[in-house]
Length: 409
Ligand SMILES: CCCCCCCCCCCCCC(=O)SCCNC(=O)CCNC(=O)[C@H](O)C(C)(C)COP(=O)(O)OP(=O)(O)OC[C@H]1O[C@@H](n2cnc3c(N)ncnc32)[C@H](O)[C@@H]1OP(=O)(O)O
Ligand SMILES: CNCCCN(C)c1ncc(F)c(N2CC(C(=O)NCc3cnc4ccccn34)C2)n1
Image (cartoon, rainbow, N blue to C red; front, side, top):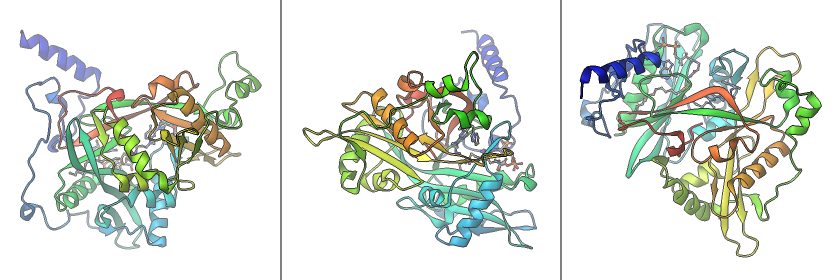
């Protein structure tokens, strides 16, 4: 085949993806590189082999002089408050700087204390003079299956540099330091998501939003009144029943963990990338915790079998610069499984209980089988895309969102 034409195609694709950007840090990392796109000779799997633990750098990377490393113990109320405030004021915003994630303290403790977590992976940076927390990055251990291989990974999240310290190349140092600490635990792969394009996404997902409180969403600028629509017509359009329709629909309890684990493991086995949850993981990640995670299941009234499951997590956003409202209450679809109830009906019940709990919006990614209900349940496409990444693990080709069974927080 005439290579030059192939090269032309790849270059055009790369240009179109505006990936011509120089990623001076990411080009040094064992991740899929844009220049390798299209090279089908590269095998799927780890990019670099593990190094002997004796050869892993034993001391932390150097920070710029005025700063020092700190390990953040989220069981300490004061430290948890410092982390909460750093993120509340400096974490992810939408492109128009109208909203900023406002992860709660109890959510952060839940997200960062799963079974087998390492405190040393909760990494902060302080200014030496006043000891103020100015940056943060975290990892938690997870077993992630990629096709038939279950891989021990670190899930990396909450990378945050104070607004006043941006564009000083602090992020690469934070990433190298968390990588070093993960290597010390003999783990060589990681999974992470970001709203920005980096080398190289394994898939790119679309956010969808289902209005629950359309008047507030329009007032704060999250949504706009549809063309030829009045406010009262819009409120009516999104109205939901007062209670769930499915017989046997109830909150998950501790006694349900074995059944939900079986249900979830079986369901997730169909996806190319998915967590390999055991009962301990299910107990941590899916047992309801107020203001953090909600999960419901369907217990057949006849047989008492657990046939279906749905869950969503609570992630409010600060509304920047609105006189009337300061918080947008958002629910994010988490893991959902159906074996008897139609997914459409189960997810409508999830919307109903989310509305009952006074959420303003229900968000979902187009992962797993979510696409089958989004339009019919009146979700609208969002402006945010979420790119999924693996570190030191090459995928032969990018996945479709429907092949992905992993939701990060
Ligand atoms: C084996 C174990 C491995 C463990 C590690 C696995 C990898 C984990 C990777 C992290 C997963 C995080 C998952 C989440 O938490 S995603 C959420 C990220 N956080 C935010 O968006 C909060 C608001 N923004 C900020 O706090 C800062 O802008 C951050 C800290 C994001 C960048 O700070 P700053 O703006 O001051 O820039 P810089 O001058 O220091 O550095 C510029 C370099 O940093 C690259 N950059 C920018 N944004 C991201 C990003 N979101 N992931 C990875 N890299 C990113 C950028 O391409 C450039 O590199 P290159 O393009 O020149 O090469
Ligand atoms: C590193 N962990 C990745 C998950 C973090 N998550 C949940 C996230 N990452 C990127 C996004 F694009 C995104 N979106 C939710 C959609 C949305 O609601 N957009 C309006 C909006 C309301 N509040 C905020 C706050 C920040 C950004 C957009 N916001 C877009 N979500």
